[in-house]
Image (cartoon, rainbow, N blue to C red; front, side, top):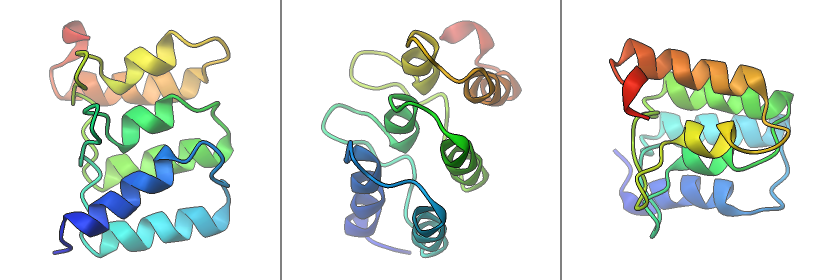
Length: 117
């Protein structure tokens, strides 16, 4: 298992506003997750990789990253310091990707969290 530093590296990849999304990013994220990095590690605001990904303008690669994170234990029901889950950020943003929202809501429904967001 990787220590918190490894998980913080994963989180830092999503905190950079100018991070480049592409095959190299997907490969790096998959490697970090395979090494045991926790996708639910919060930043100082309680935001996880899902929160930070939801704040971005979604592309095809963001949907792929969403799938990879969810397949590796990212929890869409985690609330940040303001009580928001990732879908709160994505669902209220102009230009939000509907598929992204649908996937998050479907995961929350399967965890019994449909009415709590």
